Image (cartoon, rainbow, N blue to C red; front, side, top):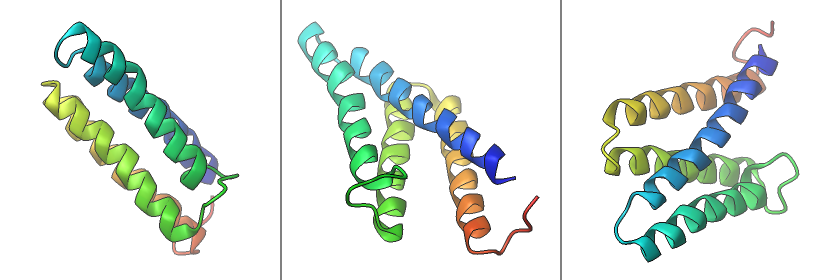
Length: 113
C-alpha cells in the first residue's frame, strides 16, 4: 500500500511543478510569464528538496508536513487562479488524501498491505 501512495505522491510532486509552471506562463505580460513560469516551479522544487524530500537537509516531520502543504496548496491555488477550478479541486483532494494516508500508515494506524 505504501508503494502505491508514494507513486501517487511522486505524481503529485510533478503535477505541482506543472501547475505552477502553467500558472506562471499564463499570468500577465511576457516578462512576468517567463519569470513566474520558471521561477515558481524552481522555488517549489527547492523548498521540496530542502524540507520534504527523503534526504532533506532541514526535514523534520513537522517541517515536512508544513512545506508539503505549502507546495501542494500553492499548486492548487495556482490552478484556481489560472481558471482551472476542477483540476484545482481534484489536485487538492488527492494531495490531502495521499498525505493523510501516508502519515497514518507511517504511524501504524492503517493496515499494511
